[in-house]
Length: 122
Image 1 (cartoon, helix red, strand yellow):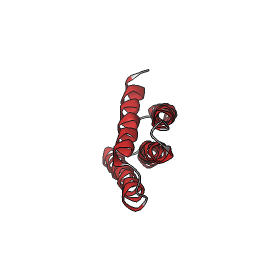
Image 2 (cartoon, helix red, strand yellow):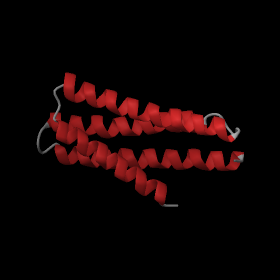
Image 3 (tube, rainbow, N blue to C red):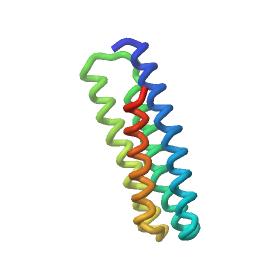
Image 4 (cartoon, one colour):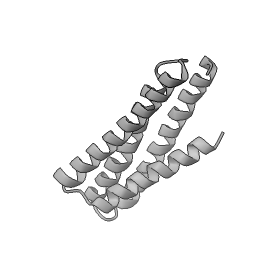
């Protein structure tokens, strides 16, 4: 892997996060009709995916060009960190915060769907 492909990966990850932020803001705006707690739940769910994605990208792409084993280890660690952030935020928002779980899950789905679209487009 060359440094050019690492830089391209970073740019793609950043673009995905921007798209996710827009999508989650739109979903949260739609949930405002149900109440502020619904909008906050959607923001928490989608925001957790976006922040987790940023953290995953920072871990996975932060080491530059390395041998395959090191790159794979960073990739795996990044994915685990992402989902740890998502589960922690969802647990706090829904469990401790009492926010509506449906809205939080819709925020997660919106962010993940947007991530797939952003990664698929060039």
